[in-house]
Image (tube, rainbow over all chains, first blue to last red; front, side, top):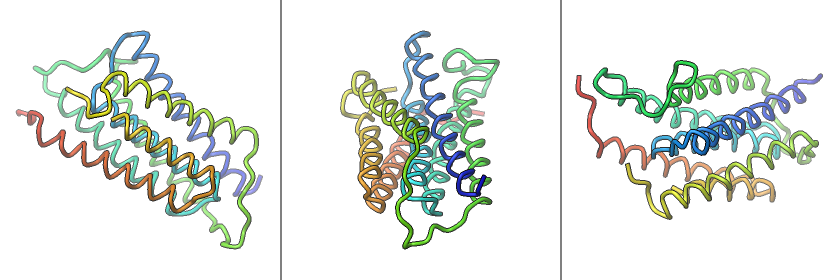
Length: 172
Length: 50
């Protein structure tokens, strides 16, 4: 296995992991009937941002600006999660939503963003500059499945957030 | 909020179409908008009372 193949596999893993997490969020939304709050939606956006950076790496080859974009998405999403944790940390403020394995979903979200920072750091250790004259890499079947799964979950979020909040900002 | 999700969808479509810099720029713009919405939320909701 070359460094490039490991890098591409880890980018695919990142996309599929985030898609699975966002599908889990839909499970909570529709099965447990817990609608996402505005902060929850911002965290979903953060995860989609991280995945977009991975898509760009797969499509155009690894570039530091794509990793930087994913890291910035982790920072923004992690900040939102931290804000939501802080809003509910005092004893007189109830937690938002049912906990999952003892932790609230926004706490899990913060753990996920920190984990993404760790994975992206590993990817940067494996980074080798893509030559400017190199042809665009061709996507294998798994990479195409990951990207189309991401397209599906993003489109689903467009529809459900439109149904819940309309075109404007969501209410509290 | 639906608009922000749609813009990410657009960024993915631009990436698949081969528009590298435009896809990245659209993604960054969306991230900045999300950050602006978050800052608006922080300044308009209750503060943490210790």
